[in-house]
Image 1 (cartoon, rainbow over the protein chains, first blue to last red):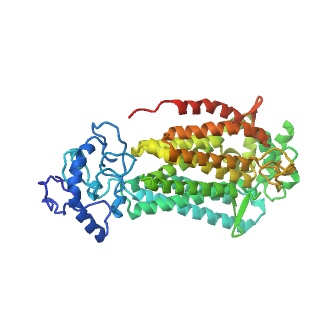
Image 2 (spheres, helix red, strand yellow):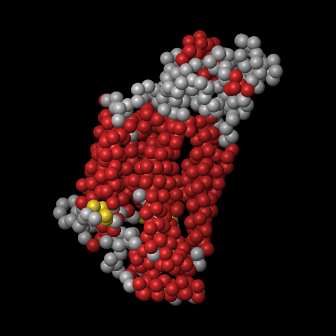
Image 3 (cartoon, each protein chain N blue to C red):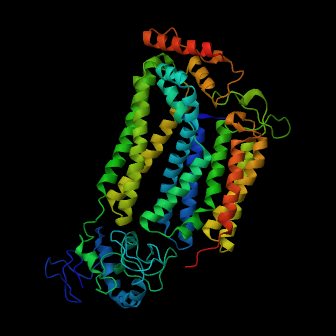
Length: 298
Length: 264
């Protein structure tokens, strides 16, 4: 068998590792389970040993879990994720380990022990494929949850910043779109919301990866924050599109001309041009656009 | 009808978005419950749904963006002047919209990528998710109804709807309209129910369930287009773009249905 913590080779049935001293035969997941769970786990470990050896034959045909490159096993079963029914906490750890045969269909015939989730401490040959232990042990988690968490925080913060900018902007000008000429605030609002969307997406993907490896607090936190950040940021970016505060008559006419807009007999007086705004840039741009539209004809 | 909701009197939120998000959230929750009841891993369903939603967002936006590019290229000087005048409007023109079929393709790509990345079996996962695709879509249609897009033809009989003026759909309030979005939502809900029953009672594979949905939707969409009053979506000859896409997708869906299953 091999040490669950450091991967050193041990005599079968060892209770402690002779290299690092870690106790063996207790579920040693990347998560630190509560002491109660550890006890429950230790109790069922012995029961499951027999079941494990029976399932070992099936396992030898299954693909091992994510972090390792697949051995020569035939690709019948995809990565299964069985749910050991009685164990609550180990259920989270179910993901990464080499699992018994059944695919997505759930419970394997022998009720898998917690031993299935983490390191196969039973030293069965099908599990004990050397490459698995030669790598960094799963105790530290080969998947780092921090990037996901950071992205989640980033996504939420960007959304909040975007909201703040929006409030500043609307407090300054209310429904007065004269500020449309000075695009600084609204564009900042939109861009931060957009960045929030991107951060949310990246955070979600990273968190899903982390959660599949080990469902600890950091992974969960990153996941939830990314999700909320993404939803809020998406709402903000979309509401920029549907709000017409900074619309002007000229811009709507321009979009009408460019295509796929059919304004037809719209009442153009609903949109003003804000040409009384005291800005040369805006007036100049407005003039240019109106000249263009008039020269081309509507 | 209620294109926007004002939160705390300040932030306006488009109702279409809210409805869509609510539909997605409900779909994911129900799918997770179904997975748990049937002994499958519900977290796989959740993560796959996350990937699908990301796919929907990217796909729908991308298709919309691509559909606007030819227009901009053709009228580049106007677009440049528009950009100079009002960058937000210019950006809104380029990105401010979604295309359903882009979303569908994005969703399917999302779930395929998820299964490839984490080596989860695609078939059982799609089998659980399949009934919820039309379910979520129906909520999208309700959102369309509330938002005032995708509206129906002018119609003055029973069930006609009178809309208020909506700057995003300027013609909406010209006449009472047939609530075609609600009809589409109803048909989608019926499809979801049928797929759910098929899921429970038969052993049709996930691929076949999705194919059934596509067959149903393309045919229904083809005929419903005649009840649509928003003509600015573009025509090619006698048919609208959606009808053409439906015609193209129908044989694809049929092939999807009739391809024999791979034997394990």
